[in-house]
Each structure stands twice: as C-alpha cells, then as structure tokens.
Length: 228
Image 1: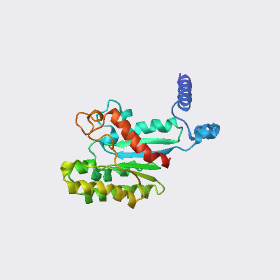
Image 2: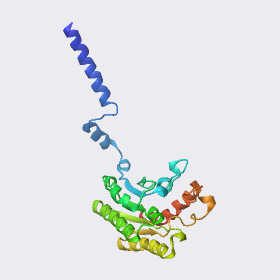
Image 3: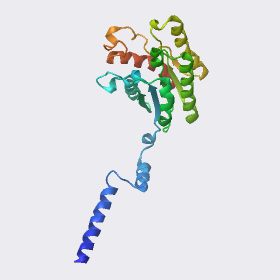
C-alpha cells in the first residue's frame, strides 16, 4: 500500500512539474532558448516615453482612458511602427510639490523621453511661481540623474487672467525659462486652441473633452515627433 501511494505521489509531482514548465512559469533556461529562436526584429529595444502630469494627462472625466492624449500619441506611434511605449503617469489633482515626491518610484524603470506636464494646479491655487519652478527643476534633476541620456519635453501652461496680470506673466514665463535651463523641447501652451472653447471642454470648463484631447495630442506631437 505504501509503494502504491509513493507511485501516485511521484506521478502527481511529475504532472505538476510538467504543468509548471508548460504554463505561465518558465525556467531561465527555457526563456533563453526562446530568445535564441526569436528573430532580430522581435528583439528590437522598446523605448519608454513617460508622460508625467496631472488630470490633463490622466484624462479626467473621459469615458475611456484611451481618449487621453498620451494614448492618442501611442496610437500615432504604433501607426508609424516606431519602437516606443507611452506610459501615462498622470494623476488628477497633482501639484509640482506632489510630483517631486511621486517621481522617484516611477524612475525604477528606464525612461528615454520624459514629458513633464505639471504646474496648472499650482497656478489655480496661487502657489508662488518660485516654488513651482524649484519643484519642477527638482523633478527634472531626478529624471536626469536616473537617466542621463533622457530627452526632455515640457508642456507649457497658463493661468486664468483672474489670477492677476503680474501672476499671469510670471507663471507663463517660468516654463520657457525652465525649458532653456535644461534644454527641454517646449510645448508653448498645452491647451492651445482648447482653453476657453466650450465645445472642447467638459462642463467644468477646465478639462478637455475627447475632441479637445485630440488637439492636446496634436500640440504635443508637433514637439515630440522630432525627438523620436
């Protein structure tokens, strides 16, 4: 009886081992053999584009996250058969200070192109433009420390005139200044041809509709494409 149980145990272990080696679990040896059989085209390196921003990047209020401009840019990249992967790291309500703390864990993966879209929530809250500039600078410094060869894109932003003309001017000017300091490709105004147009914005008059996001994608693509 003990011999029979032992035989069943060996048989069960053999079936389990066979299942693991032919399912989702693979040994390193099997992976290496598979890689050796892959064609050179399939071994092509995929480059990461990290979109780091707030609700404008996240696609707040849209029915489908694929309607947000990073996903639309991914679709454009795929149509051109380019080896880039877009990562949407947008977070609704994010400020430059919050972004400075959040960026660290995102840099655990390699980043080839970094698209920075932050500052709008600072502006709406009347945060000192000096603080915003320092926070955005710190984010860029962290990205470059982790990825020295990373290409940089900065999405410019404006605040409503109701914030006061002096603050409006100071806020608008911080983006070109930051772009110049770090040799970043600059999108002059992310919401160009969208801000203030009712049909392109949701009921809150702040966040773009799906159609508005298409224009955001166009604004970013015009600056991003030459870097690919």
